[in-house]
Image (cartoon, rainbow, N blue to C red; front, side, top):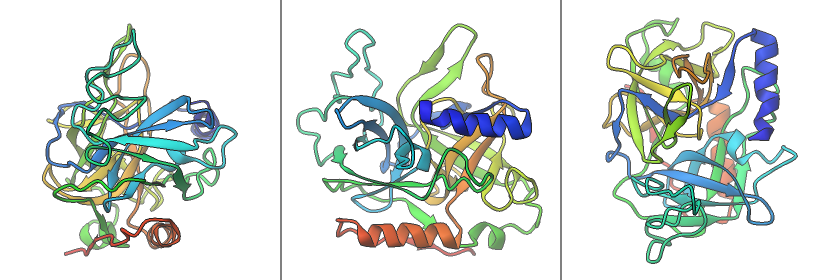
Length: 307
């Protein structure tokens, strides 16, 4: 993802620390059968060539939430179309020789009988304003993909209302034993020789490190514990945009999308991961306005109030 190099360089220059886009689930992960609306999204250029892949989540049958650096329309190399796979093992049978998963068609096509069922296409991509890290830490790392075919599943992701985390957490520093669930596809672990990705939907528990009391969070990002330790998991190299749920494995309340991480290298994925928050008034207003201005008729996004 060459367009992310500017973001990485900007953060490294400012913080003198290793930074990389992230999203894949690592550490003490389990297969995610709890969130059928979490999908693996593949992006293509104007010639239909593969560019990169990310994760994301359906908010309605056609509104797919992901990271802004995945759909970035401000980059020199911007994606034009996308395809989203909702199978739990969307790319698990990927053959490096053929560069194809023969079961699902990942990443080139929707397998027979899956279009509009567990696979969808899109030529309608939006981003909140992500521009290679301009305005850090408010990097505006939210994107939307409007699907051409509605995907009907038993449930959809629910967005936390504006100010959800501030209203929910009693410690103003945000340093509490609060659990979040990360879900996504991609890199699962690494060693000095190779990266390993199952391309399956996995989830893991992460613990809050900081909400708004650091330069890296500042009310825009969540800092979550890296893996493994204490039964937790984390994020690492791979596809970004997967949802961060408030609470345990059964939660559907989305408070952000996986964005970037510190301290990642080829030997470990142990650095903290950062989630760009969606429970802010500006982000929610952008999502609603974008959906209303899109071609979809599925505009009924559900919001969850703080208790």
